[in-house]
Image 1 (cartoon, rainbow, N blue to C red):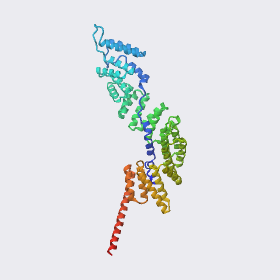
Image 2: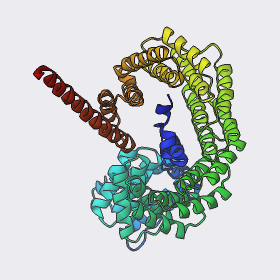
Image 3: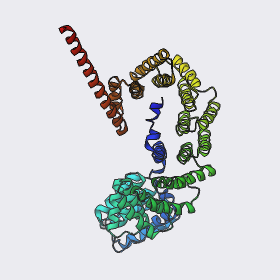
Image 4: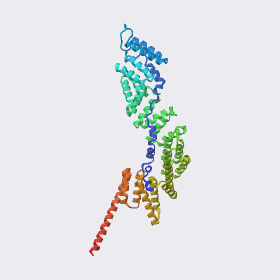
Length: 507
């Protein structure tokens, strides 16, 4: 068993890498997500700007006739009074009367792109997006450099999460001189989603320059810095945001992620502790906090964090809790691991499935092994093997247990029996898919300890095939050299015996 422990990844990779590996699939999924800007369609400032786009248009946009100007004034008044349906009906009637007048003495006239644009705004406000899209596109067809039509079409595509199309229209609006910080900010957001962090950074910086009080643009800028691995700058900017919005857990997690990337482990732990004290930390984050404490050799603090994580989840996640117990044990604190397992048993009560109970008792066996209580190890593993004789992990641990007993057994007959028992269990485990790697590796190591290098090679080669690593390849290379020497010795001895046989026959 100790031979397996010597290959344990927590020992091989070092404390910090092990913590990051355990956290990678949990924290990163939360902390590295791209946080979208808040709902701009509920932003009073956006609504005010949007309403303003019903008014008189600038010199660089489509010209309107006097009649259209009067209609725009009326539309704006109706809009500001909240009479959207009336505004739409009046505008549609105006367009029809202009393009196909009922008065035979009135000449038909082409409506301006500006009026089509305003109609698109009304459709958009009424959440009739497809009609709005067609109106904006028609306005742009009539007047290709219609800047505000490009902007509002970009907003529409953003609201439908059609980010590529939104990006194209925002880019066109900017090229036409658009200077609204919201356009730059949303353009940055689309670049961020497309993993173009440098372009996103430039867009967000422009938005930030024009609107330095906006949370969204500062957060977006921080996320672009994280994508570019500018972690120090990102964590500083996130710190500013945290001062402004201390209850926003996403900000704390984003900064925690940036701090971990800089190997500022205790600063990251402080962030997670703040979330814990605020009641904002989830089970995942509390587990990471425990891992960070273990990395800093603070097992008691880790135990507190793991316990809090176990009690935080809406449903009991025994797999995660047992992983925490294994970490405590693997780092050399079996007494803390045992205390945590006691809490796990109390939390689980009688709800454990057979599979969960097996996993729990396997962890208890490993803790007993670390504590040097071999009698307890044997009791647990033999009971598990009797209850679940085809469990590859149980068979592997049982084989390791017999191999450990054989190391200190002085009676040669008893020692030989233990070696046979160890080989038998490990050979069976090696033939089970779920335990093939561990079983083959343990079998190979057992045979190496018995100086049976040639017999060890097939099992070790299989282990390398299943899970290659540089450290294992180096170990197997050393064993192979020993096997070659063993083979040469056997061949030499065989040659000597043959020579002796021929000599005896000649006499």
